[in-house]
Image (cartoon, rainbow, N blue to C red; front, top):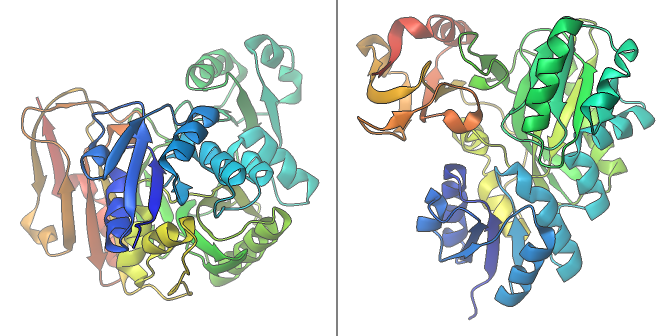
Length: 401
C-alpha cells in the first residue's frame, strides 16, 4: 500500500514531534526550507531546498513530489504557502486561502476584526517610514509597533512617547519580510496574556486552551515569552467569552479542520481581545504542553487532517494539575557553561530538554530563536507554581562565559 506523503514547511526543532507523529501514522515525511542544516531534516524521509515564503516554488515542488497534504506547524512564514498549495492542488485545507491570508497579515486581521465588531485595538498599517511620520497625530501612547508578517515576536516594540517612535519603526521594518508594519494601541492587560493552541473540526472548535504568558523583564526581547503556565489567570466567564468569539471568528472565515495558535488577553477595561490567530501549531512546544497537561493530542490530529484522514480524540478536557514550561535562555552572548537547577526544585521537573552543550555559542534573548532549551514542570497548586516562577532566578541559573 502506498504511503501518504506529507510536506512540512520549515526545519526547526519544534517540528520533531510532528515528524514523529507522522511516522507513527505511517506517512512519508518531506521537510522543506532553504536551510539544509536545520535539525528537522535529519529526521524526515526527504528534504527539499526551497524558500517556504515563495508559494509558487513550494507549489512546484509539491506537484513534483505528488504530496497528499501540506502544513506549516510552528513555522509562521510557511502558513500562507501551505494554504496556497492546498488550494491549487485540491488538498485538505485549513480553510479558504483568502481567510488564511487575513489571519496571517496583522493589518488585514485587525481590519477584519474591526469590520465584524470584535473588540480590537486601534491600528494603522504602513509600508514606509514617511507614511508613519506624517500620521503621528493619529496615535496615542503607549502603542505597539510591529511587522505585519514576522514571527517569534521579532521586531516588536512598546513605545511610550513620540521620541521613541523612529527607533521602533526602524526595528519593525528591519524584521518585516514584505516591508510593512502596523502601529496599534497597546492594551494594558489584566492578569497574564494567553498564547496557546486550539483545534477545530469542520469549523467547530472542539478544544480550546488558554495559558498564562510570562516574560523576563531582564531579557533583551521583553515581548518574547520566557515561560508559559496552565491553567490561565482568566476566570471562567472570560474564557467562555473568548471561546464564543473565537468560534464566531472561525465561522465568519469559513475555517475547516486545523490546529490554531491563538493569542488573547483581557484588558484592564474588562474587554476580551483576540490578538492573533494562525492556522498552525504554536512554537515553544505549546501543543506538546497541552498533550502533557490534558492528554489531547493535537499534533497527531494535525498530521492526520493534513492528508485527509479522520481526526479522533479532540474534545475539551480539564488540566491534570498545574503546569509550566520555562524557555531556557541566556542573558548575554557567550559560550554555554552549565545549567543549574536546585535540588529542592528537581522533583517538579518532568522533562529537561537542553539544546546546547558546553562550549556552544549562545545569544542573549532577543527572539524566540535564541532559546536554548525548555523545562516542563508540574506543580500541586497554582500558588506553588506562581511562587516557583516568581523566584525562578533563585533556583535556576544558566552560566555563560
